[in-house]
Amino acid sequence: MRGNIFHRWWVIVRDGFRGMTWGKPLIWLILIKLFIMFAILRAFFFPDFLASKGDTAEEQQDYIVEQFVERSTP
Image 1 (tube, one colour):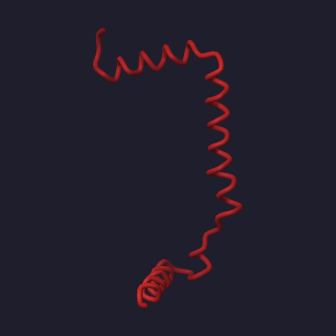
Image 2 (cartoon, helix red, strand yellow):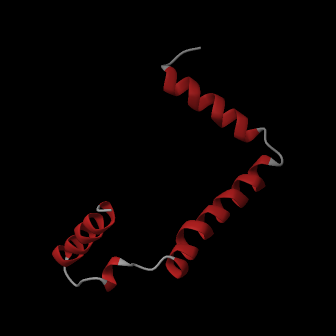
Image 3 (cartoon, rainbow, N blue to C red):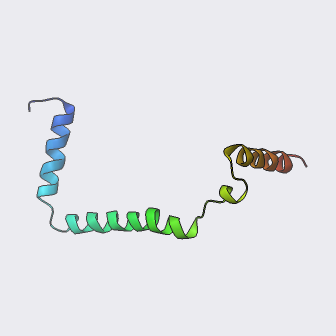
């Protein structure tokens, strides 16, 4: 086989995808599921918590430092 390792890897992957029958719909299903999990659910269920603790980055950093110090002392 000619070419470097990346070319050979790409040829193997390309030929593998061409021969798939059930693999293509399953890959699309996985990609759609990942998009839903990370893009849509993140927007609704994981709000920006630090934005409510300060308007500037410095205020947010101060809040984090306070929490670390408060939780580290017994």
